[in-house]
Length: 122
Image 1 (tube, rainbow, N blue to C red):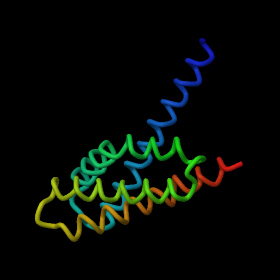
Image 2: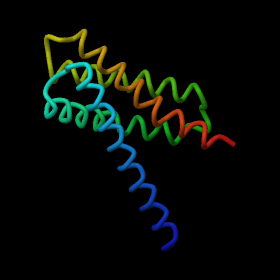
Image 3: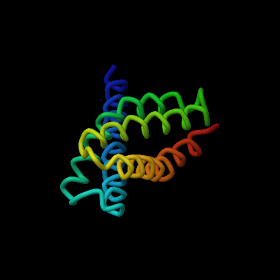
Image 4: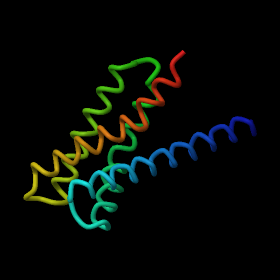
């Protein structure tokens, strides 16, 4: 039982660190696209990734079963969800919000998800 608790604790810790890296990568993309001030970009990246965290976690958990389909569906749904959240945070700049959501998620998925996908494949 103690061993299972230790493994679960490590998995939760890894998931939180993984999520924080998503926030950092997406904050950088928001900044590069001049979405707002650093604080606004950090806050937005935090909120959009909080909104899509469960989705990304579910996608990662089913990576082996669904393969490329799971990665693609998770990426598209994350982009749609995060685009909607950005439109709520900064109304009036819908085109920029969608570009930022798409590019930020592409960067996150290319830097984090795809390596995990390739390294965990049998």
